[in-house]
Length: 331
Image 1 (cartoon, rainbow, N blue to C red):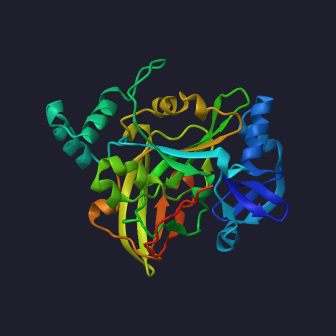
Image 2: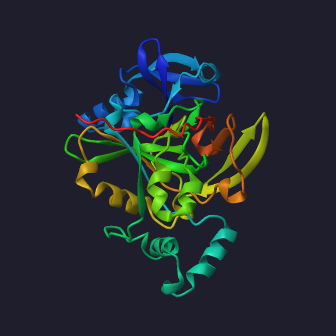
């Protein structure tokens, strides 16, 4: 089952994707978040809760897209209670990338960069046996729910940014239960969107490079994610595709298991606050930046995983540089 979320005349609603042209409305106030909270309270699956409230109302999917009525497939009514984060150095990439990576990993640890050491930890210990704890991944914070941009809407890049580059990724979506237990709602395709020039300047600037907008959706895949997922990432400029590349994700293409990445995120008590939403990006090995592409105002990012339905599309909106210093007032 795949789910979308939309603005409706009766308020925020979720809808089940029935085909490429139609969705069926779920008649439940509050959309995906409210459905998930109700399912957790009753101890039933989200899919069972959805089936209970499916209506007979069918909506035109194309019209929802054209009118830009789609929202991210999971949102919190208070953006401050949605945490957006991610993990890097998690993906093995294509066969050629893997061969090159393993050649580098054969060196003594003293010759490896810190990034390669981190990647090696994942390759060697990122998929522990059931019940065991594996290697810690790289982890970063992106922001709260205010940075999440709906599908089809512009991704804003700040004036001080040195780059505005896409990152096609698998995204895990979670709601925390009243007892502090994280519940995975499902998965979506996402554009993590980062400043790769800033990150390349000094890897300790990674934290700065990640404090950007992001987008995910438009569809939410309910249930376990396929172990092998292949999609395509594209950049469209003035109606022409100027760059495209396939990308791989899913556990078969990752150095870490999803369970290990989830453990190392939710082991922190502050990430298990009842009622919160978590949006967690699982990393990528495919970037247009690595191929020398520099994005421009109006470029459109298109990230597609066919298993997850419609592609995620967002145009780039770059703010002008002001050079103004941010002042702080004394109280």
